[in-house]
Image (cartoon, rainbow, N blue to C red):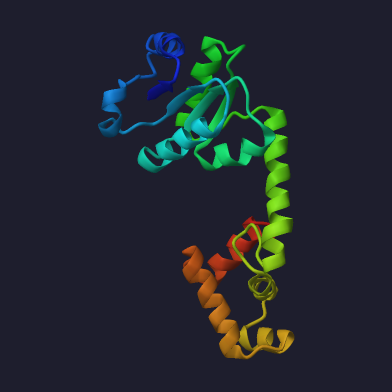
Length: 204
């Protein structure tokens, strides 16, 4: 794992603790490109334009999950940091060694650790995105549009292509094209796989 911080003292303190943990290996900054990183710990006084820029660059270059240690993050930036591979956020003022160790191991295992208030804000922003951006354009957070959802719903009820076409007033050719588009775009194997995907996403 890699520790990055604008403040050398903060980096030294975190590296000093994590280096003592047998399950964690900290690499030097100059080794970051060839280390095959599992996790990045990024320390910032506050999440501002500069910090967001560094997070985006890290995502583009290293693509590893990020544990963010910060003293301040605005609600407007929550969605942006999550988009930038941040999976855990810890308060800089009160952070302890065991907390950062737990966050690093959780991130390496594919999990996340977000404060409850931040998680609530993230869910609000996702809901706002769905209602203000996706739905007005006929899209759903599942990656399916309204027509595709309706076709998959009828497929799940056992209707064949001809019956779906009659039910929706479409041509059979259009129904086949809708199904083909869904399976191709989402990398699904066949019709049952497409129905299973829609069921898992809770749209049918």
